[in-house]
Image: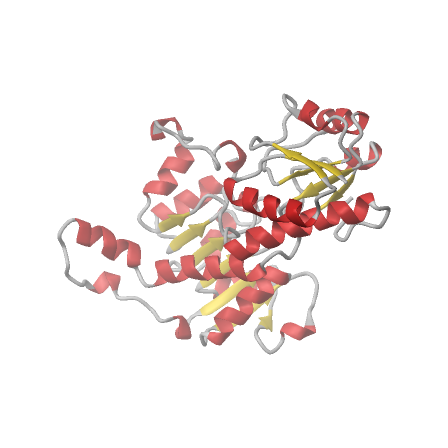
Length: 330
């Protein structure tokens, strides 16, 4: 097979070498840069491209890729909301993702963020850095055993999160338009409004669609408990960031653990020498004491990255041999 890989990280380079050792006849080239209009010519003459970027790929990007011989676009990630799937289909490009490289990695990260906030670790750490090693009444925390955890979205990741919280003794409730009887041992199914009102921790694991954009906004924050924790590991656009900042600053909710943010494709993956150049909303969130953030790295474990890379490459090989893509999304 002939494939060009964009956005290859140093970690992935080791997995690429392992793949090439096992498939010496494959013709593979790569770059560390994401796929953009400026470098898509690199893929000319290849049959497939692979990328894991957050930057959009529009019809104007996909048409020249197809003209250059690309038949398959393999995403080394779950989300495909940044790809114009209709345009890809129009130009004869099959798009496939990797939906289940390691659901536990993301679920664990959400649990970690929730526990960090629940047990007030950030507050204690800041106090101790100032030389204050005392305990105080306002920093007395709750135990997860006594909490109600609401999982929004019960696919592979949401299901893994529900099992983890259940194992720790929490009461788990879940909302998903699709009912899954296999999850009944771990949670109670409720409607979205009930979940928002009753949960001490609201953890979000759903794909972004036009219908659910901004589904967590001022109206929802007003209904949540004033000490509730929001955990978002899915897509930043599911949450109204401006409304979230207000809710956090005025203690309408207790805290937020965020691995994703609106507009992250322009920020995450870059290093800023001048943090003053960051958007105001990012700066505000970073400096809030009841927020913990990471740059879309919930998935970033050794097992997950390797699984993601190898599943993507296997899908390219499978598709170019004339078989149906494992996880076609268009």
